[in-house]
Length: 403
Image (cartoon, rainbow, N blue to C red; front, side, top):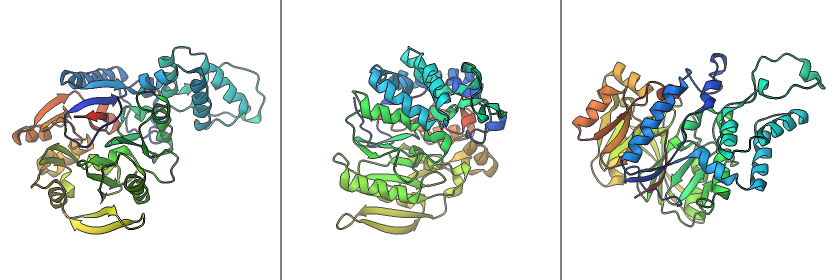
């Protein structure tokens, strides 16, 4: 029970996943941009690939728990379910009271709690609601948008809405409006689920600044790396540092390294730039081997923060804080075309299940062969459809316990 994650590589014992559901079938070409997709995955195959991912984890001694099941267990309380339903409808952005009532009745009529939660994730098409007399001007105005409640197709990337930091959790404020509602599930898990309600939250979803879990990497029990990225603001990192240094009872973090990375979709999060493979090995985006702008944040006097700006290579900063010389393995073996292709398909986004052992996408075969040459054991999973969401094995997993 609870959370204990102080590393990116210690043996993984328990992980949170979300198996892709009907939310992927509610993607349409004209609305892909606002829902943060470049293409429409084939759901049946995406589910098969995700099941293969879960099976590799289980075959290696990892307990897999699913997001919709944890939330459904909370909904066993009628009072909490009613509270969730009202909050969900408000956050869905429904304006008219009559429509809110229809959605409430529609969802409340789903008595199986797992089916109920899956439906909130999938979205609600206008055609699913009962027809009634038009009472408002807006009812008469033709609107081609098909949904009353948007789907949440990015949910299978469970790394982003919340992140484990030691024995605490960061319940994040997501950058995009389309992903902002995802964290409602984390809110109810960490407020009400008996296994998780007592975990200290070091960030809250209603904080002012944006931060996402793909930018948060546990270097060790004392050092946390966070990306200043397209989706995580510098001010959010300062707020997180204040929480970890001065308010969190269980935190052992003494240093936060803030990496200033390019603000583009290819460098979406810090974990698309580099991930740890072993005690001294990392896979990296080959275009970040030049010195980086890095800020070392530590405790200051009277509740303030000390900030030191550095220009160091990734090898230099990681070697310094890990206390050993590190080896950086470039995605695509450093070849420009290969690395660009495999980086787009998350060749650097590996999930370490124990030191020197990682899960990778099959389509990044050049990078995978290179990892094997460096002594890394790779568990290859099919990836033709999962990769269309622009996230790899690390993105698809939220570790809850590492040994």
